[in-house]
Length: 140
Image (cartoon, rainbow, N blue to C red):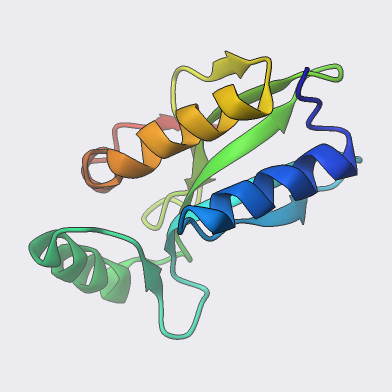
């Protein structure tokens, strides 16, 4: 059973992702909730971090980031749910500053399943970046 609340489990996940070429890190988002994050967009980084595969999409994101009022981010993320784990997308909208997230998060039970779900989201990152640019993620 993969437990996102267990620091050893999070460290193992980060190590496995790193071994397959996916950069990830841990974030304490407050209130004791910890996430493993894989950045797709982070405009607070210098230079802005944009993980698009398509050069055209990367250019669109860079141009958008210049005019956005707020810092923008989109991450593949783990999220704790009472000693279990869900994986989905979360971040901040550059136009409104609102928190955004994917409508569905996938519940995972094992480290292998977590890596597989993250790999699928990573492989589809250009799709998710286009959804992000279109403003079609849930806003909170």
